[in-house]
Image (tube, rainbow, N blue to C red; front, side, top):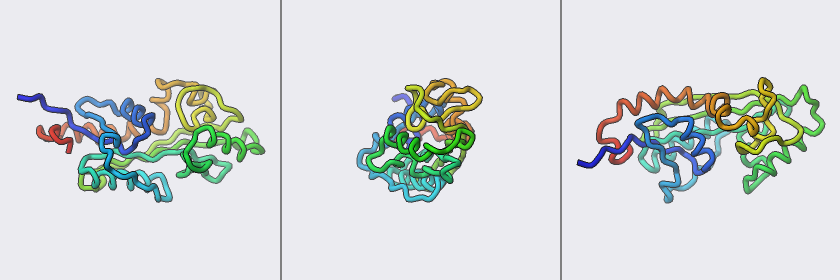
Length: 215
């Protein structure tokens, strides 16, 4: 008799850094994590939502319907107080196409060049949505992390705006703190912890045959 495969959930992204980070944060026993790279024929979802919550829901529901699997999708980014919440949903493409971390960071520094240190507050936010194979929403969670935007990059870890985002309590950027601390305090970590009970329940209730097709 063949060994039963673990229950599978697809992470709704092809961003390898996000896949690795999410898999580490959600490394729950009894669940096998897959990514959109395992389904090469599925077209990318255009993120047309006006908010992170809308984009997360759009990705989760659309990908779930397209591949007929449970899908966990997230949308996250940076909201800077002095910029009225920008770059917001445009975080990954703040400086235009193609998305480029270095250009995004350079533009952010330029936009904040004349903003004093006491007005450079910001937060990272993350919305996660778990969708059933039929595309309906099973759960949705939210997490955020407050900090300040520095005047120059510091640190080589992380990605995106991490080298500019300093956590006040640590006097270090997310890029300097490393994965161990980031996995405790980041916006994505907090959204993942809120999602974990839903995933535990799902894995516990999964039928014995679910591992055969991951549905």
